[in-house]
Image (cartoon, rainbow, N blue to C red; front, side, top):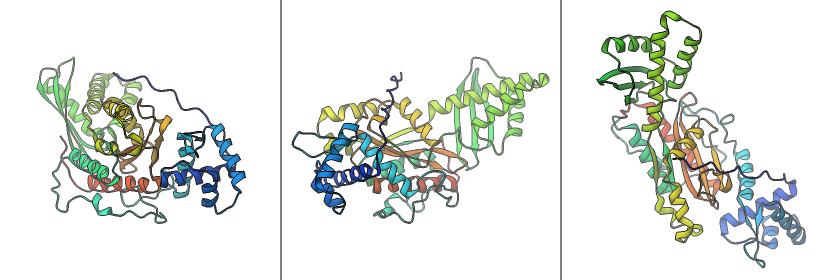
Length: 382
């Protein structure tokens, strides 16, 4: 059973340019030191652009607005989720990591900007083993990349898919296994073979399936499963009475296949042990709700399917995470596939205090490599 959705985070007052400059200096310093930041340290970070007294007043104002907090009365300040959000928003804008701005690279629309100041070290760790047999299951490749991502970032990783519903279908056939149970065999344009066992309240005879398979074959070529359902509904709405029975049955088969895809799509969470090594989660009371949140497969499936249809990079920080237990976490996700076929989502789960400038391109690179592998070879997926 799903947990109720959390209330959305509060709307925050926009900042002036001076306030943004001070906030981003504090966030940058805190990310790299882990310490509360005082006005003198912020002034040095900004090249003495403003006096310590001016920065102190601005930091006090930022605390009132909810962008900074003070762990102790005599200590400096650290960012809240809102402070990190402001910092990341500027970072994303500077690096143009959105679906509208990132140019296609072959079949893969996820390219690391050449201007990135933190080139990946150990980038080869994301490559698949040369000579890996192409018959490896697609889900095995997704899980493998998720594990590599966890190892490289030292955070937990999350991956889902490949989603059948977002793939362009080249073949779709239903075979009767037993009364009211069919085997759906679907082949995507990328060559991935999906098998789904589907149970129905009605029984389909061999002659019925022959007509249905012939009709569905005539509809395939450039449509995803989602789009196929919409096309069949459109034909039904046009009132073709002589074909209504066939179309109703075809719609039933397609919709049940969509439901089976949701039920049988893999969700992988790797590297949970890395979170135990994070300073922010250094005791069991802090890590317990995070580990509990990772057990809610349906919520992760819903979240990651949304991300598969979103921007190239999606980042949910602290209160923005609507899965309960992740208030102290950041979730970075990137869809994999092509601009036409978003097959799934890959990402990491870590503390809000992370080096976003490094972690974002790592996740992008992982999704890029997985995309190339899944769309370049014929891979069997059971």
